[in-house]
Every structure is written in C-alpha cells, then in structure tokens.
Amino acid sequence: MKTEILKIDINNIDAEKIKYSAEVIKSGGLVAFPTETVYGLGANGLDEKAVKKIFEAKGRPSDNPLILHIADRKQVFELAKDVPSNAGKLMDSFWPGPLTMIFNKAQNVPGVISAGLDTVALRMPSHPIALALIKESGVPIAAPSANTSGRPSPTNAKHVIEDLSGKIDVIIDAGNAKIGLESTVLDVTVDPPVVLRPGGITLKQIGDVIGHADIDPTLMTKAEGDFRPRSPGMKYKHYSPKADVIIVEGSPDRVLQKIKELVCMHSQKGKTVGVLATDQTKELYPSVEVISLGDRDKLETVAANLFWALREFDKKNVDIIVAEAVDYEGIGLAVMNRMKKAAAYNIIKA
Ligand code: TXA
Ligand code: MG
Image (cartoon, rainbow, N blue to C red; front, side, top):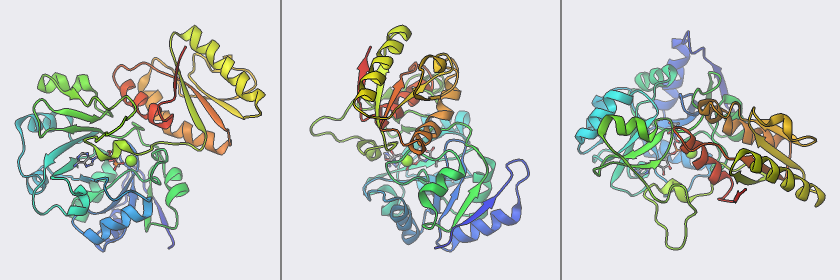
C-alpha cells in the first residue's frame, strides 16, 4: 500500500485536505493524525472492519481496547451508558484536552473497540486538526498511538513514517506534538475515580476539580504473579527502544557518579552506551553519546522530549541507555511511568 503524506499547517488548516482524510476514514481506511499528546492512528470507530485494520497495522494484541475520539459532548451520550457527575465536571475543566475517561459502554460501541470489556474510553482532543478531522468524518474516531506496538509513541510525523509507512492510507504531518506523552486515562465508573495511566492532566489537576482521585497501585511497579491490570495496555512491553534501558535514581551527585561507573563498566565489556541526561548534567559525561531531555526543572519540556530521545538513541545504535530519573511531581509521574516501562523496571538506586 502506498501511504500518502499530507502536510497541514496547524495555523491555517487546509479544509480540502481534511475533507480528503475524512473520506478515507468514512470509507474504512486508516489515517494517522496529530493530537496535542502524540500522533494517533485513526479509523471509523463504528466500523468493526476498519478498526481491525488498526490492530493489524500496529501489531497490537486484540485484548487491548482503543480510545474513541470525539469532537462534540453529545457523542458521550451516544457511546456511554451513563455519565457520572464527576465526569461532567472533568469535561468542563479538561475537554478538549489530554484526559481520557472510562465509561460504562453503550450498545452501539463495537466489541472490537472495548476488547470484550463492558467499558469504553472516550477523549476529546484539543488539537485543531484532530477536532476538524473528527467533525468532518461525522463519526467517533478510534485511535491508539500511531506507533508499532511496543515502540515509543510518535511525537511527529517522521516517527509515524518510520513505523507505519506502507501499512496505512494517510499520514497527516503537522509538526511536533506539544505534550509528547499520552493522555491521562481515568476510570470514572468508580467513585473516587482511578487513574489507570498518568498523562497530560496531572493527579493534582483532577483532585482540584473533583476533590480526589486514586491511582492504580500497579502503575509504577513491575507486575508480579497473577497480575490483572484494569487498563489492559499496561501489561504489555512498552515504549521500548532497541537498546536496554537502565534508570538511575537518587541525589544528583550520586546519580552522576553511578552513571559514570555504569558507562565505564559496560564500555569495558565492549558495549556502546548512551546517557539520557538533562541540561544540568549533559556536559558532565565525557566521551559517550549524550541526549538531554532539557531543563530538569521544566518537566513539561522533559515530557515533550522523552519519546523523541528514545527513538534518537535507536538511530545511534547504542546497546545500553543509562537514564537519569526525574522528579515525580506533576507530569513527572507520567514521565517516570513511561521511563520505567521503557526500562522494563530496571532501576538502580544510587
Ligand atoms: O493521548 C492519547 O491517549 C493517545 C492519542 C492518540 O489520543 N492515544 C493513546 O491510545 O495513547 P493507546 O491505545 O496507545 O492507549 C490507550 C490506553 C491503553 O493502555 C488501553 O489499554 C487503555 O487506554 N484503555 C482503552 N480503553 C480502555 C477501557 N475500556 N478500560 C481500561 N483501559 C482502557
Ligand atoms: Mg500506545
């Protein structure tokens, strides 16, 4: 299949290109499109055959449910069986935006979307191109991140091309995704709601609106034994670059020292080592490949650069990436959740 690449300017959206892409969606095709979090791989969410193509193109396990993206709040009432009052308040505050909410599903949601669960994930993205595409299509758009399953999520069209060129109909290229990490997934079928995946909207922001939200206890630690996460996606290998990732956590001095030791040790064994650093430390690791995530005090920047950096290391063909942990505050929780998954929970305390 030849994949068409359509460049669209976020500040001057070409209506013809949106119309064309919406036609592809309506006729059962696949369109990768930008959102404010990461690029999504979209299909008509009410067309079972089209949705199945998403799973094929990504190599995604069929028991991992998909998010339906909507552009109008009326669609919630068509896709969810009931809308708890907490959900209404959160929509007022965070939609459109990087918050996905889990509802009890209505009957017209195809089984392939919810992967056999009784629930459905809904999100209204804020990216104007995503909103325009959903509106023009006239259907909810099912969209996981537009990467090959297991790889770091795509934060620009080049990443999508790397993973999915030749497998999908259209890729809309609109530059870099602003947030760079996926939406927060919040189960609102329970009270208090439970965060199943930390993301663009922080626990504190949610708490400020509804008083309190819990956090799924399996989020930050390795799954042991008979582990059944409430968000099926959490049990899979994720965000993985080709290299093995090791995270080093602790006070700045000791982290620096420990990383230098690790670089030395692995280099002596003949391995190529890369360091995932921050602006504060990037000059301090001589003679290895260093990529900075940005100023460690600006966690938004760190979040926006993480998936890009993991993919950059792939191009440099390193065998091992040693990564500095960052603060767990705010969006740092989402950064560390993704970093830990990329490292398969290989963490060293310095
Ligand atoms: O920011 C985002 O959310 C991006 C953009 C494209 O919108 N999408 C995204 O989709 O990250 P995906 O499929 O890569 O991740 C969705 C996560 C998965 O972990 C999945 O298991 C979970 O949401 N999920 C989807 N439906 C669910 C449901 N009914 N119950 C629990 N978890 C669900
Ligand atoms: Mg994903």
